[in-house]
Image (cartoon, rainbow, N blue to C red):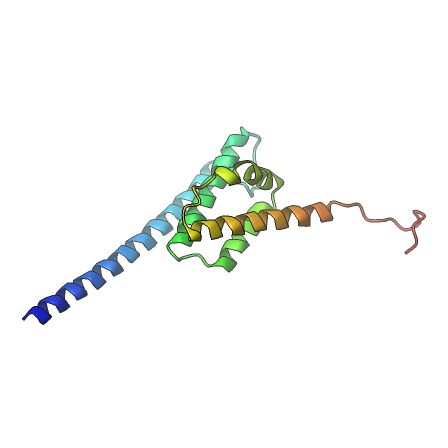
Length: 151
């Protein structure tokens, strides 16, 4: 009898855990939808908009912070792999304003309490630095033919 009761408790715990994971996934999808909707309604919040209207730069910083928090949440619940995180960050940090924003706020953005959080922040820092280096190299003027420099 006690084995049957213990088995019933174990099954109930597994079902609850599955329900919690499903609820997390639904919450994350809803947050993503709300972020996209927010960016459509307020293009000044979109860090990646090419024709973003001029606005208070804090609005763009808020948009970047919202996306970073979203990716951080996905990272912590195991729904965002490192490759996908790096892909998203490469897109974010293609924007010089985003790189500047992260250099200003990155050290204070999180409590860095867990190993997983520290890894997340290390990846963000690496991608920001990679983008900075990449865009610095791309800005150099090409040598023009006939400029006195041998080819």
